[in-house]
Image (cartoon, rainbow, N blue to C red; front, side, top):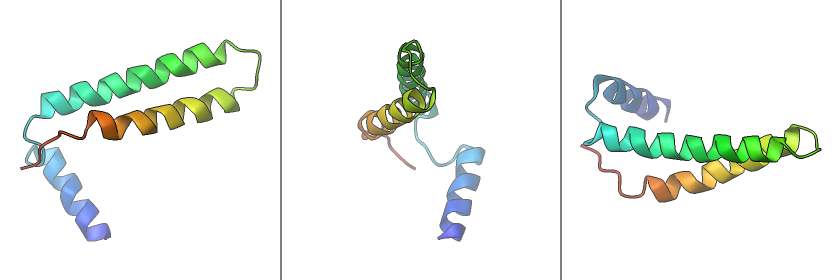
Length: 74
């Protein structure tokens, strides 16, 4: 399992894993922006910082599969 992850990481760094890397970066940046905006909005509430971090992380994790479902690999 570790070998598969290492091989995928090497291909990603060489630029041979994803067909359209700009689309991948765009989708990841969109999900990160949504997560950061959710964190900022929730951090304005009068609660501990732990709750907004958990909720924004969960929201970003839920959004990512929907944004990356059409990603093409080489």
